Amino acid sequence: MGDERWYYMNMRSYSCCRASSTSSINIAALVPLLKLIAEPNRLRILCILAQNAHCVCELMEHTDLSQSLISHHLRDLKTAGLVADTKKGLRVYYTLTYSGRKLMRSLLPIQIHYSSYGYSSLGERMSHLQKAV
Image (cartoon, rainbow, N blue to C red; front, side, top):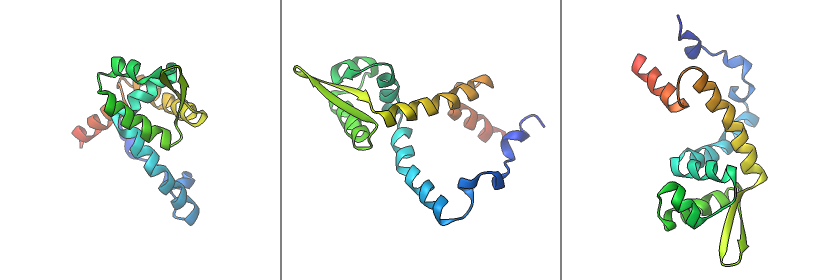
C-alpha cells in the first residue's frame, strides 16, 4: 500500500493530458525541449551556468568534456534559447537566458521532491519502480 500513490493518477485533473487539439500542440512543443535537456552533459552545463557565467575553458574544467563537445552542446542550448553568449576580450562567456533560468528554477522542486523520499533523483525513483514491477 505504501507505493500505490505512485501508480494511481487521476488523469481527468490534468488538462494537458486530455485529448484536444490545444493540449496536443503544447505536448508536442515540449518534446524537443525535454529531449534537449535530457542529455546528461547538457543538463550539467545548464546547472553550472545557473551558478555563474563561464567560458568554454572553465566548463571543460568542471565537466571533463572536450572543447568541441562543450561547444556543440552550447550551440544546441543557444539555438533553443536557453543560453546566450557575450564576448569579453578573447573569450566568450555563456550565461542562461531568462528562459534558461526559468527552466532551471522549475527543475529544482522536482529534484527536492524526490530527495525528500530518499532518492537522489527522478531516475533513481524510476529505477526503483521498475524493479518493483
